[in-house]
Length: 156
Image 1 (cartoon, rainbow, N blue to C red):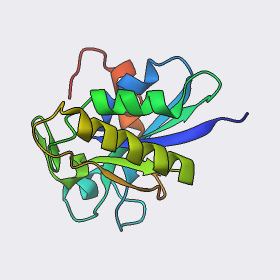
Image 2: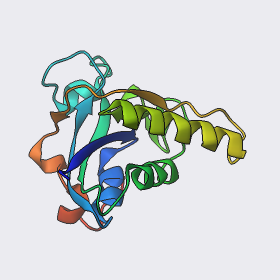
Image 3: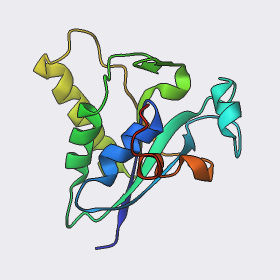
Image 4: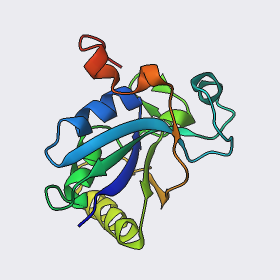
C-alpha cells in the first residue's frame, strides 16, 4: 500500500508539525499555506490576512503503520477546535482549525470524528473546525520547515 497524505490546520504550523513528526508511521511532514485564493503566497502575505490561506501541515504517512483515524485523534487533541480564527495568542484566519481531506473516505471519517467529538460533551462551545477537500498546499519558506527540529527551545 503506498503512502497517503493528510492535511491539517490547527494554529501555528510549527507546533502542529512537531506533534505529527513524532508519530510512528509518519514518513514526512511539510508546512505551508492552503485554503485561500492567492497562488504561491509568502509568509508575509498570509500574515497580512488578505490571502485566505491557513497555516497547515501536510503529513505523509504509511497507513500500514498509522491510521487516518489516529492522525485525526492527534489533530483534535493538539489544539482547541472551538476557537474561531485563533489558537492561543495567535489571532487571524490563517490560524483557523481545518481539516483538508484528500479523498471521499477521509472526508467521511473526518466528519464522523467531528460529530463524535461534538456529541461527547468534551467542549462546552461549538466546534468550529472546517472540513473541506484539499487544495494545493503552497510550501512555506525553508526556515519554517521542521522548525522545532532546528530550534528545539523555541515555542509558538
